[in-house]
Amino acid sequence: MTVANEDTDPNIEAGALVAAARELVAELSEEGICEFERLDPSPVPNAHSEQRSTPAAPAARRFSAGAPSPQPSRPQPSRPQPSRSEPSDPIPSPSASARTSRDPVAPAPSPVGVAEAVPWQGRRPTLEEVRDHLGDCERCGLCSGRNSIVFGDGNPSADLMFIGEGPGEQEDRQGLPFVGRAGDLLTQMIEKGIGLSRNDVYICNIVKCRPPQNRNPLPPEVGACRPFLDGQIEAVAPKVIVTLGKPAASLLLDREVAITRLRGTWQEYRGIPLMPTLHPAYVLRQYTAENRRAVWQDLKAAVELSQS
Image (cartoon, rainbow, N blue to C red; front, side, top):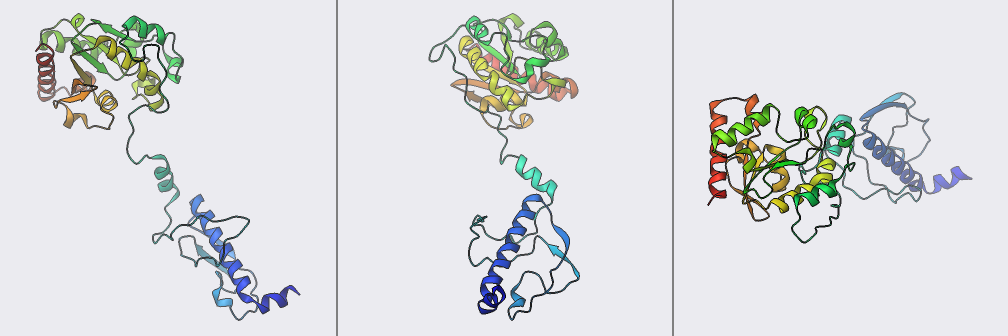
């Protein structure tokens, strides 16, 4: 009885076969499978057999998941397919698909998620209030590997504020920012280069705990620390901010930057003039007269504006 019905209306069977083939192509595309080998079923005598997605032959065939197939005559009620246009190019390899799914359209240096509510919302806090609210922080995974929280150091009413990336090994041990080799170079730049005492400025980082192997902080880690960085900026209220390196500049400017091209050009953060410059650790790695002169020029411009 079933065969007689199919012979009477062959379009029903052809439509079902086309829809099944279409569904299989979609599943293979999602799994990154470009082709596979299978045995075709035995042919069923039918006047419309040329419309089927597989030729009527018992031999093994190669099936390309990237080959276009006709649209089904009607959606399948059990597994509806989303509407989409048929790609003209072959299906990407699994590795390319994985990169596309992971990589964002554009880097997002700003913190993710909802910012933590702080008790000083809408008013200027003190540094002590910000530090007390930070507490023995366990808001992100960096807390598990730290020895010390590295909050900040310097004049709480400084006209010039330096913001770096994160604590290193020596900073983690001592609980103070910029006290390792890069810190020694920064101190020389401040004291010998622009004629200020380190105690005249305020220095902090965008995260307060050392990232493993001194890697760049991850967005959730930056997001967890962001209320405290903003609290420090509000508490100090500097006339000028100097960002040290790419991560700090990218965070405060809310966009991915190329620090070697952006450095030396005035920017702004919440109405405060911002000077991006190279991180001292970068200068140590690329210890050229050109890099040292570039940082000195940036700091000189920053201190002149802060004292005007």
